Amino acid sequence: MSNGDWIESSEGDLDPDLTEEAGYAYWDPPAHRAWGNALLRVAMAIVLIALLGSVVVAVVR
Image (cartoon, rainbow, N blue to C red; front, top):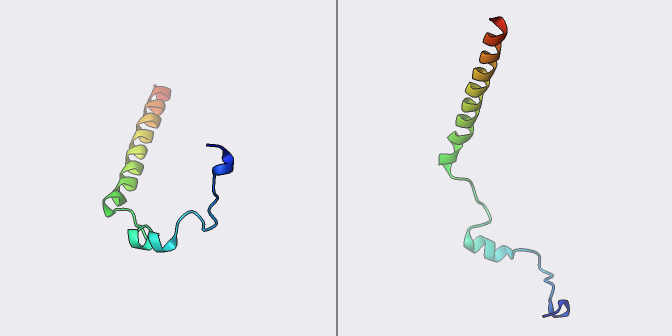
């Protein structure tokens, strides 16, 4: 099959009627992921405090 056989679409990527029927138009992420970002930030803060704390202890000694 050559490129000459390819037919370009002039309607865009997704047909709005089909996206509304399939439920893709207004998608919200699941609620159970809302705490994931906060948990990740808390974990990173604890790791950062542990790393900086060990450096401070090593310098003070």
